[in-house]
Image (cartoon, rainbow, N blue to C red):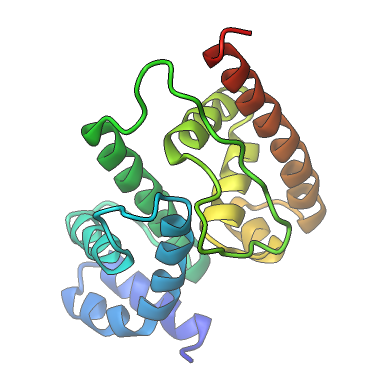
Length: 194
């Protein structure tokens, strides 16, 4: 397992324009990116045409075109990758019209342990919509959800990325879960005509 310091050095070299650093970085981060992609894909329907490996490939394509990122460290890199994965999947779902007007969103269960199950836990578009709403109210809480739930970062890793304390992350995580569940429940009620 590569050290966080080794990954950070490669990220900083890549930020400085060293394309060989990206080549050296890729095999070091692939397993972690694959786990993150699997977490995202667990939220999708079973017969989704996009697979975890294809999702990672799309992230790499977008990263290679991304010259203006000043990588801070390993956690920052994985946070950006998690955000890219979410955007790729929501763009894919929108392009395929998976959520039609009046569709019913399924409720999502936020698990403190972030277990990945074989059953899809939520409609990604409904969650994305709720996260955008949360970002409008409190961007940091939205970032905490994205980093913890989708990115799989620990409380301390999330705190490092956001520059806050672990206790702040825990508080934001609890409040964000409640807010999102309320919003998604209200959206489901509105879609059903209640």
